[in-house]
Length: 403
Image (cartoon, rainbow, N blue to C red; front, side, top):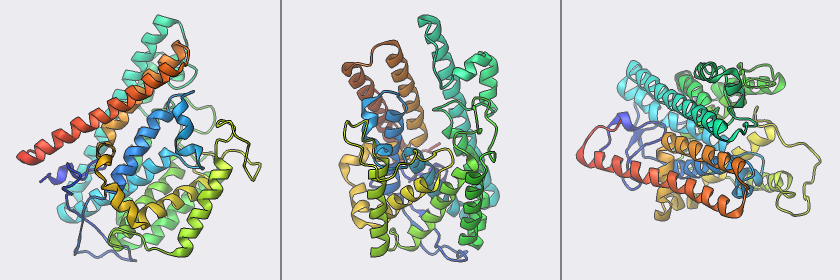
């Protein structure tokens, strides 16, 4: 059996069919102090997160044909909203029970350790990206249009230092700093939800609203031309908190949110509206079927239409029993593994997407090149997930600690 130290944000068990029990909690005005039930790993979370990671890779390559069929083309939200909401969900599962089992200081140390690991991945990705792009520029004479371009304009070392200080967050490498910040704040979310879940949600929602009303409410970003962090943490924290509350609600319903016909109808209706309004009709070569002439909803602040879209999708995923059964389908095992090893797979996807962007800028974006870039990147991510899964299974079999 995997040790508790391995039950972290990206992995709750080493094997799809051997779920590690994790302490859960019940949604109520006050959570019970002695836990009476145990919560097993939710395969839906890992499968959905795995698909989100694959979509992030595809979406991170400009002029990439497969990006026309990822989630953001069929509504308002995209894989980033999925990633952050499930981060809150997984945090509650992984660390909520640990606070009660192991105590406050042990759990805080474990959270700090996890934050440090995520930071090391961010630092490694930033360093590798700057070096690779710098070498590519020297060899080809081509200047990157965005991404790490502002950091390189500062100079390689100054740009790296600003990036490591989280004061300069380039495109495509800005979600891990958000992850670090939200995870560091999770203890406040947890202890607040021990007392009043709805009060925490109300406070979080108020902060989200404030960030949408006043766009200066943000953290500084030396690479930004306007508002600061692209993923405004004062807005995106609401999704993280909703995810933590969702974990409690799913626990209270024995794995499912309460099914309400009116709620399901409202969710489906809104998803259909989002499809027509947010569909990439022009890019698909189809007539524009948008019912309203409005601009694309702002992603940086998770505006209301995006928030409602991800909430509608979330309700259907976590209230329909068929989704829970389908998530355990054996052909989805590699996708599930991607979700359970999310940090490593995200890093691999970022580097694969960087290679794709460089190839697309250096050569013509031909169909053979697109096929090679996308199949190659997906193969790297799925292959790495398989290797990590096999290693975790060996450690579980031999009882070795999983770090």
